[in-house]
Image (cartoon, rainbow over all chains, first blue to last red):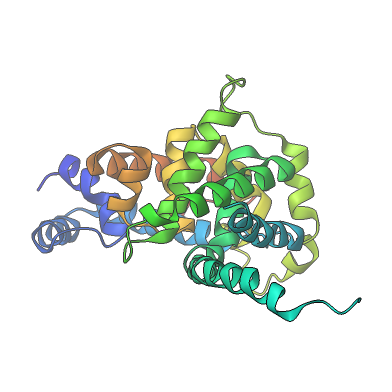
Length: 78
Length: 209
């Protein structure tokens, strides 16, 4: 596997979306190529940062209430 | 006589109850399958619209539509993915018609979003030298939103909402290979942005030093 092929697989490797065979080739390439290994570590880190730092907001209670209303209101219509 | 005739009341009531029993079952299932994803949907809508009131509208529309077509939801498949797809379609139809400015970000709004949580953010227990830990929520948010939409979208669906590549491919209507490469390039762009912030604030991003 060359660097170009490894880059194609990089994101899928981060997300554990590689097939067993792809993963084998990918890991083998990383063991021989520091550049790709570093990039892989960086990509994993980037994913972590997004997961940790992007805050999920709680939906407003009023929105929850109106959705509960919407779903029951449409049953009355029928 | 003011006393209501019991026999007259019973007939319509029984009829109504048997109808609503079916509906009630649908409601319960809908709540269990769909309404539980409200927070995720709301956040997705926030990211798309960057406006809390538009986000609420979008989520409401989505749930209304989803409820109406709940029978066509394939049981056993990922309901969250199904809802996201509906929301995305609604968004495209409704909010993108007029605006031809994707990627335009209201930074004041982001500041508002994060204002309330900023105080909680001040624990710098982690090693100061690791600039990633020093990044603020709003910086990561800004960096994410500075990306072209096609990249931001897949990153969000993958890293925040935890969808599989197959689900994402279905949502963005592109092959899995495209999802892979967008994630790769998107993450790379994002990293560059974040390193830019780190440099601006005087953190050393050079690993060898």
